[in-house]
Image 1 (cartoon, each protein chain N blue to C red):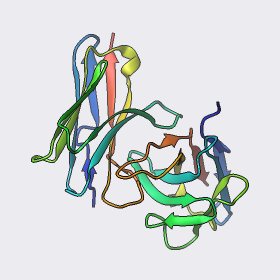
Image 2 (cartoon, chains in turn cyan, blue):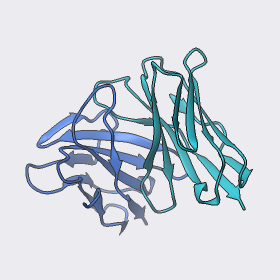
Image 3 (cartoon, helix red, strand yellow):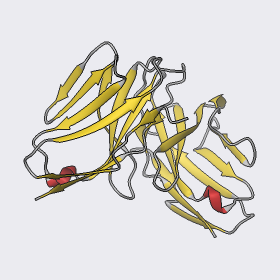
Length: 113
Length: 116
């Protein structure tokens, strides 16, 4: 039962353009969503988050949008840079009271110079 | 200001052996989470511990796997009688507190377990 889904395994974007990574979830009890970035042989690092009471959160080049009715969120990176090339994981929290995170399968972003 | 530390970074075991994975949380953090990442998949929650207590082990396989977080020392994830399907990357995350609905978790670099 995959509660958080990232249906695009990979995405390739030209440097300077916008990268849009998508994530869908099924559990309406989730009330906090996060994006993590992961380089090979390293642990995930926190990128940006959004509470379910909001529909947008922005931090520099990164913006996360949440559409609760569609149970969908997206991460926008603009402008994309080669250093953004990594695996991006969407994660959700709040369906239990332990703070555990439920991750999607990840999307590999390649930003071409 | 060391981050979350995990050791070993790489561990090779033969089928039937035991694997012990260690996690030292960030200084001042008393909450530890273990996640497992199988090849080509996302991270899956295994267990959540506070000092000397297992709070949530709903993601742990029922047999062969155990975890502890003693009063002193690192958290240990122990896998007995390993099988090839246990080959994965195991990540530990720590948090300073539990604050609903979300507590920020800081991840370690992971231990890559290979079972021959």
